[in-house]
Length: 204
Ligand code: VGL
Ligand code: ZN
Picture 1 (cartoon, rainbow, N blue to C red):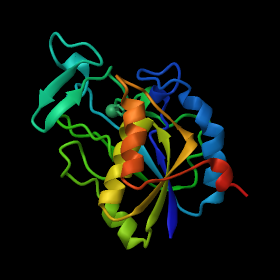
Picture 2 (picture 1 turned 45 degrees about the vertical axis):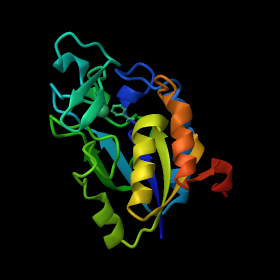
Picture 3 (picture 1 turned 90 degrees about the vertical axis):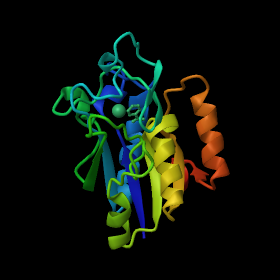
Picture 4 (picture 1 turned 180 degrees about the vertical axis):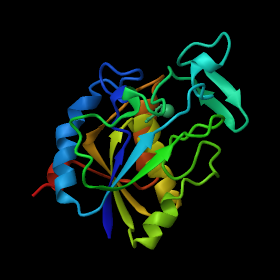
């Protein structure tokens, strides 16, 4: 059984937001059309406590987009974004969230970031999604949302690692592109065997 995985379509990742992905909101009409076509829709929500360690503001002398070494490796430092309970953390108002059967929140532990919706950035702390999918008999995921080169990429790669068949819908994702991260993301996803398609191949 297949499901649509709608990743982090939140105000802060859209134009006007704290960590805006260029044209992040342009994908929303396409994503809504895809949502109409799927029986099973899963959404993710970046959900950080104030003072989260992925925020540059939590590290003295650091600026957004610098990096730092945390316990689990190198971490990009971001502007404060998707703070629990803030407007920026809410789903974009144009996104149809009504059909979502489960929302996986991630990044809620102060000391650890979570790009992937399967594992936090230490690559071992599970979000529980694998168990949810297996219990529901879901074997195949179509990934859409933000940002191609961070949360989408890590979700796709970890999903494959967890034994699922992963597809990415090219015109239903948008990227941040930090030092070539977007090209690298497409290369890595291709190399891992991700199915790459456009929305018209799914829309009837
Ligand atoms: C994301 C950076 C920080 C994403 C989340 O959703 O791609 N990127 N937090
Ligand atoms: Zn985040």
